[in-house]
Length: 140
Picture (cartoon, helix red, strand yellow):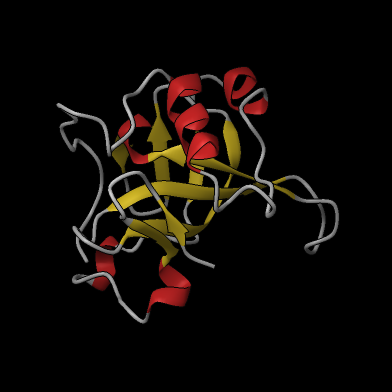
């Protein structure tokens, strides 16, 4: 389900958008996410993109569970990415920090304040804010 931000930008899951990553070798879905200490956090299961600039804004990361049961999901701003390898996406926050982040809640994915709280929690300006500079991953 799309989400509209303050500047009428809609966030979509890449898997629902009909778009693809320009270079399939750069598609990080399925990669493991590692914290700043190299500890496993989970797997990138989808990417949230904006419909106007077609840039990736969030990683949706699945963690925990077994065979899809008991897993949780959370969003991590692409601004947190420090390095991408063939199999891993490294971020600049600790496992404990990510564990305390606002959780994925399907009831809130259409709420601007929800995304703003995620950016704020990680210490980044929302992409719709004045002066935001895109530092993240992209390639649609």
